[in-house]
Image 1: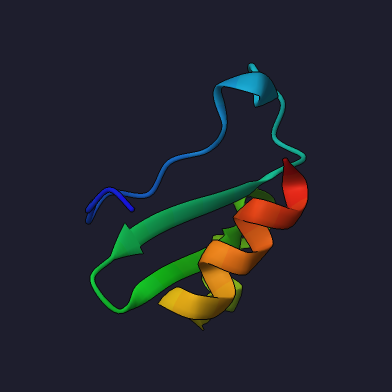
Image 2: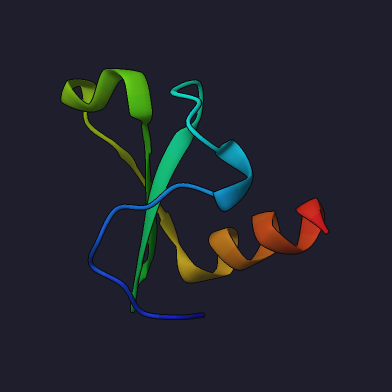
Length: 57
């Protein structure tokens, strides 16, 4: 898993604002709604985040 402290969204999203943003870190990843950033974010431990990524492939 790459390490990043910056929020980013998938390059597949283009200019759409109907997506989520993620930021990866040593403990896992945070996910938030691009259109509702003020609502906070969900945090997933590394094992769950890696399992979610593997399920998407």
